[in-house]
Structures are given as C-alpha cells and as structure tokens.
Image (cartoon, rainbow, N blue to C red; front, side, top):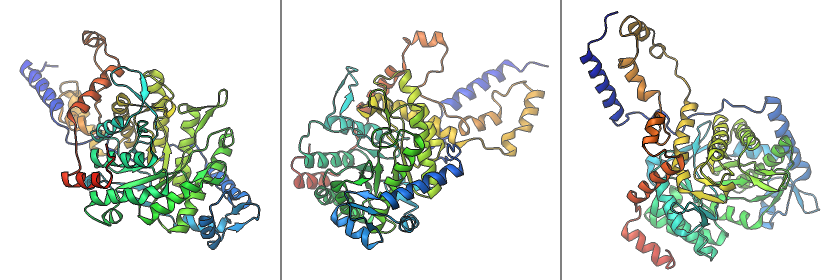
Length: 508
C-alpha cells in the first residue's frame, strides 16, 4: 500500500491538535443522565420490603408524635393505640403515596441552573455537616469555620457536576444557633446561584431567614412564588418515632412553600436491624412516615424521599461511609423509591478515608457509581466529604467533580446508530490509510463520545516523572487553589446586601 505523503500526515496532526485545543461544543458527560440499570432487588424483594414497611406502620406505628401532628394524622385516618403510638393503616399510607409529588423543579436563582427531580434522572450534589476541614495548606484537619463555608460555596459554584449545594460543613466558630442558621443561609445567597439547601435548628428560625430570601427574590412573597432553597429535615428518629423540633420545622417550611428533603438516616445494627433486608424495611417505613406527614399537612407538597441507609462497623460501633454494604443499600433505596414513583434521595461517596488516597478513590467510586446506576435522583454527600462525614476537603471537591463526569458518561451508555456503527468508515480506513486517526468519523466522535479528564494523569511514566511525579492530591490542591484565587462571585447587589445586614447585623 502506498504511504501517505508526509505533508498529509503533518496536516492530520495539526488538525488533531487544533481539535484537542478547541473549546468543546458538546458535553459528553452532562448531569441528569438516566440511571436504573442496576437493580439489586428483584420484584419479589421489592414487594416483600414494601409490605413489611406497611405492616410496621399499621401494626407497630410511630411513637412520640407531637400533639399538633397527632391531630392532623388522626383526622386523616391514623389510629391511636392508647399506648403512645399512632398506627398508619395501609390504605392511609398508600393514599398519601398516591397524593405525593412525583417530580418537581429545584429552582436555582439562575433559571439555567434549575434541575427537575424525579423519574430516573441522576444528579450529584452535596450534604453533610462536617465539623472539620482538611486544610488546603497544612494538609491537616482543623475545626471548620464560617470562612470555610464561604470558600466551599464559591468553589463548588465553579464545578459543573455539583448540581445543587447544601452546606457541607458547620461553622464551629459561630456558637449561637440562630446566628449559625442565618450566616449559613447568607453564605449560600452570596456565593452561588445554583439550587441550594440548608437546615434550621428550630422552627422559629424559618420565617426570619425567609425574609432574607425575599430580599434576594425581589420583595415580600418572592421566595414563595419561586423557591430556590430547600430544607434538609430529619423529622423521624430511628427507630420509629418522630422528633418534635424537626416536625415543627416541617410545618414552618410548608407555610413558606419551601421544598424539603425529609431524611431518614438509620444505622445498621444500632438504630435499625443489622440484616440488610430488615434495615431496608424499617428505613422505608420511617421515610414513608415522613411522606404521610407532609402530604397530610399539604397534599402534593414537593418532598425528596430521602431514605439514606447508613452502616455501622459492628466491630467498633463507628459509622462507616464506604464499602460494599452501603453501596448496595443506597442503590436498593433508590430502586425502592423509583419503584414507588417518588423523587429519591440517597447518600454516597462518603469515604472513611482521611487522606486523598487509594481508599478514598475506591470507596467514593464504588458507592457513587452504584447509587447512580440504580437511578438515585439526588445523590447527597457525593462531593467533598471525607473522614466518615466528619471532614470536608477542597481538593476532594475538584476530584469528585471529575469522578462524576466519568459516572455520567457510564450512565449515558452507548448510542447504536447506523452512523455510529461505522461500516463505511471501517471500509475507508482499511482500504485507505489503514488507521482511523484524522478521519472525519473519528473527529465527529472525539468530543461527542468521550470525556477527557483534566486532573487524571494519562501521560507516559517518563513525562509524569519530568513533571515532578505529582500525585492526585497535589494536582487537586493546585486546581482548588486556582479556583479559590480566581473565582470570587458576589451574587448579591449592594442594595440586597445592605438590606440583609440591616436585618441581621451579626452577618459576617
């Protein structure tokens, strides 16, 4: 076969280099890909777990029901045992499942950043309440501060795969609970226009903070018309009882039209059975109790069905955020929620590793991929968390963002079309140059079908050595520093900021 002229080879190389340097016109690994292909539970398993959950609610019921909620539940058909527990008849629970919102929009202040929750669309985001931050300079853990929260918020604002942001750390330098809730909300308003979520220590904190959101939304009632913050609430305490303060927060958030994630976070062998099936049955019952509560108060109110199975290392009693058990249980939780047609929230990527190391990568990769393949709509804790949720890391945020791109690419799968099958391209290459480099078919697929990491190293060992043999931690540290140095958003106008500070003089 006649060799191609050298000039053609040089031109082909120039074209390939130009193609690589050009800004991508298509994201091959965009958020919102569809999951659901991983099904750890059979149809029989799903029905058995669901039926056991309904039996728990109808025969054991819920304890420590606050008086206000008890009145509403009894009016909707709950039964008082006379022994401090309310029973939820099966028909009542199933009626509330039918009433429940099946999908809804989580608004961003920037409408282009809004996402729709429901079906099998998968989005990675944050959660957690880390009390320690992995210091980007010293590499050691220290107490988290309000400054850290501002920095984490603006860092993730620049990361495409964090689809919503919940405060990932607690500002331990703010002692008063009201000032903490206010300053946390302010950090979200100032530093990002993505959908955000926060928590309220007490119900009395909700109305004043909504006034802040109204200022941001343009005036009184603006937030309720288009809510861009959701609340994270844990109204059920395992095993099988309500928490009064959190229930009151639910009422307050509904009054202000604030969507919510009602989170059940039982722990295997501690507050729920050690058997995975028994755990899933109890945890499903508890999350259904939250769903019943919300839909009794306000039918169809937007609620993320956040059934988060958590694992305890039974040798030590310590929480374990990584491993096969938590991967399969959160995947099963997503499958159960999707089976019921409810917007699902699960937890993944909660590594127990303290350093950015092999344990970190393995635990995050296994658990987050399993949750995504199972179709978890909102995958919480999936960005930035380390040390069994006790720590948050700037480097982890940027590494996890790249990991999520790879996961989205896996979810997207393979598009089989006449063009993609490439019969003509194969013939042309075999009968022509004998390779596919520089072919139009290759160019067309280059960005459409492939995600190219910017952090992961794909160079030859000699090139890596010449660069100083950098590890993932140091590469991620440099990228995080670059973003924190250059990205200083201020999404509040001077007038909005002044109005908020006049309302809350203790804002930092």
